[in-house]
Image (cartoon, rainbow, N blue to C red):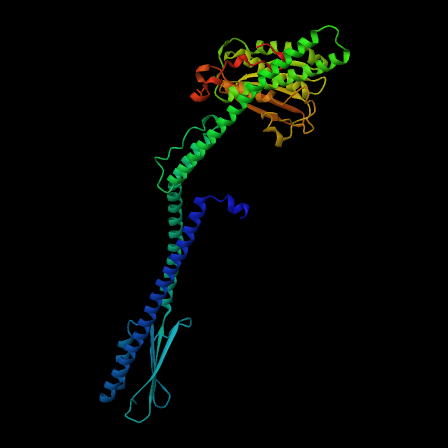
Length: 475
């Protein structure tokens, strides 16, 4: 199937086929009506000529009895009076014209000629010839008007039927549009919701039932996956803590060889890195399973951003970068979580910004209910095919995974989780030189949408601020 056919809507296809069927049906009816009327006119013309032939023969027979030829001519004139579509010519026995009707028939007349013989006008044995000519021009004009009328009625009827069919099809497909709207409103956090099929026709009830069953299976699979992630993170956290503690104790013992100290120090760095990954996974699991931000009034987002920028002063100086903060806003937020999100955004910008440029933190109110926080930097842009995946876990736009020893690909995922805990959203924009990544948050906690949490995973909803922040930023 070609792309054009695949993209054509069902209502358009149904309306088109109904229009074609209407056109074919009305055309056939018009052809039948035209043929019947044309046949009727032809039969009436033949009957009329036959009647006129019989009358002419009767008048000639009466004249033979009286012998008055002038009276015959007068009778023929009276007979043809008012019949302008008829013409009569009578030739006598010698071939001379005995009678010619007036006025003569038009040159462009549609002639139907009937020649017949009658008895001699002079009681001789010679044969007299008569010719009746019928002009069918009036019938042809009637047929032409009828054809034009039938064509107009056919086209108008097709338009009316196709327009009505389109409206009826659109009205009939409203339940499908309603299902599409309900399905579009579903998200990872609302997989337990069901499509409302009470107002759907009986033909769509099986589809609704099967889709709801699929949603239930997806919700159960997602719940099990999140539970698995949380369980794995919890199980890894304890042995990692033990390994870190024992390694730190071993490093404090005196009289250790230099090689062993280097080895233990390297292992300790990796253990801390693994421990950070586990804590981040626990935090993301909490966010995905319904943990909410504990919002309190924050007087100035710009002041909060300044604190985060001050914390990153060392890496900024090392990369010869500067930070500029524009705009400000006040609202209800979870300040520790918001600092963590800003730290991750700023750290990501520091990693990818061109040396000597300025990283800008933009704070702007979208309206009376929302605020946007954007971190933009100059540098090599992110390809458009990869831009939509920057908030995925462990995703790196750099296929070579450079810097994997310092960054494990969860920073922007945590930003997305913090935005979700505030009932906000994330966005990313990138050109060849400028990359802008940020979040939009409600200004008030009362505008945040509540999250329905199942009782079987409520134990995972610990204090979200208890998760250790990225890069050691204090919560």
